[in-house]
Image 1 (cartoon, one colour):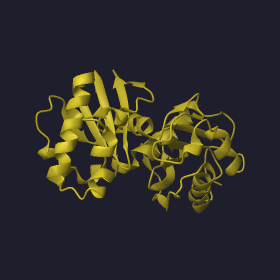
Image 2 (cartoon, helix red, strand yellow):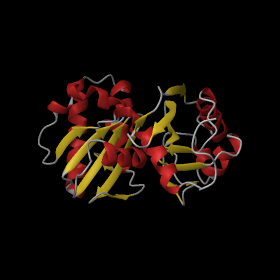
Image 3 (cartoon, rainbow, N blue to C red):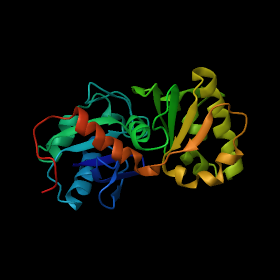
Length: 257
């Protein structure tokens, strides 16, 4: 069975059909740039471009970089336009996509569910935290495989700053940090999260997971195991499709037209 997954980020909107049996993309993903400002209408247009690229006519699962409650209502918008707050995202996207069945879920939660099912967290019990390092820092918290949704640990205060403003991969670029300098910031952040939650495992996701060999070995003093996400930056797409399969409306075809 295939369902389309779209991962909306602060810098890009990417999507592809997902093979739910394998937990992997069924075709090469297509990406468009996130508009700036990232208004609801602008982002919805970007999502439509991705969907239209594949001429997709079935259910669509989407991630959103913020808190999503009740399966639809956006509550935070740290890295997109503030006009998203209180938007009914599910209705917006379904309308823009011509009435296709749509589900919406927090981006890091989607990536976490994918990694727990098909990737680095598969079969792991206890407390597992996935952290996505990108435009911000997303988080997904699992206890014995069960998701605690919308944790938003990237907004913990660290040394007087929003943590993601100091330790995201965007912060690395903005401040022209070396891998060593950035790893030290990530280490301080992980130590803070570990102090609060005592996880057995940290899974490091987001685009930077492709370059884990450049920085993971530089992080010291963390008791939890630290591993890169196996699905890397496709985890959000896979998780979005999984969410659509389990929580989406029953109507609508299951494949592409």
